[in-house]
Length: 462
Image (tube, rainbow, N blue to C red; front, side, top):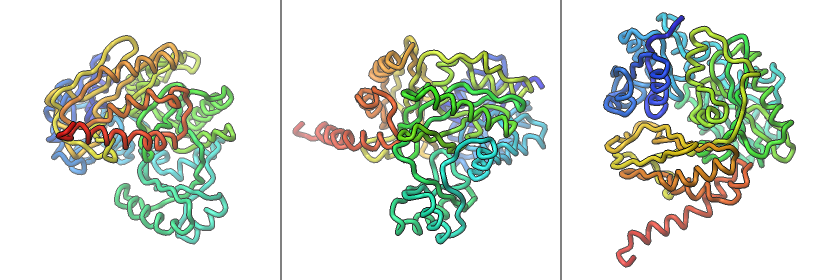
């Protein structure tokens, strides 16, 4: 079916990014916006805007009924959910089918199979992928028995979690009971599913993921990304391809991701996340994200494929490209620029952007939703922009990124721009291949001096 009009059911930079691809393809866009976003940058870019409710997400961006009603009122052919909010909600996919709308994403059964982390593990095992030792636990006694079997430390994870949420590390058996009790309560409140499971904690480890594209019959990969620079399981910097991997390991992850997509008869864009055990040069399946990722621009930069366009193409019933047609060239690195004070434990910084200057030049891409006068509401993710730098190799990409960060300015709200500037100048990061614990070590050496510098700047004697 030809898609002529799409309801973009999201906000922020991803909404603006989807609108731009639709404009290029000649597809009309209607932005589904909350009351807080009716005059946002994405709202001004879209062909038209329809209000789906008040600012708080539960009554707007997270309401299946509101999104479906908006799509029908706008006479849209399809809904693109972006990432976050309802992007991996099987209920929205089913509601689209019932209303005669195209859901630009996987089928409801595939969303359920990927969103439930235990079912995702089962699918991975059935497809022949190695998984981190672990399993579901129904009570504290079972958790202790499993922890002794797989070895300490362990991670307590929410079955319905995602995006780095619902994860707790436990190294002392005495801490397991309170960790599970808190995880069960939090998982039930955040995801509507109180189930938790354990996995062995692997360290040192790297977070490497493979971009998947599939049409229900064929599944291909678009290379890999390194997302090891994280704070509390939230990604901060991503790059493609992942540096300092052996050819055997890289090829193994690519093949594993495609095998999982084929096993699930997956349709659309998705990401298969792996944990790389650097001591053993081995990898394990972590989870599958059945949506477009925040970090997809670094993959687009090195393979030359518009992933949003491919999502739409597959949703119309067309086949995805052949694996042989995908060529990976060069390197790209992305920094997530957030409205938060990194010197104050990343405290959110809502307010109004009073000035915004973004860099341009060879290999530079900026995906953003802000300009001077843009409000930053307290209700949503603090992501303001993604700064991406590409080059013929990692060295060139890194040099361009350093220059781009130096030319980037955002005023009116606190941001993590200064943190990124220090991060990309770090010698260990420059060598490539840092593990998931590296950022904590980096932060420990930079947060205190930054606090002191700020205090000195405010001192009346300074």
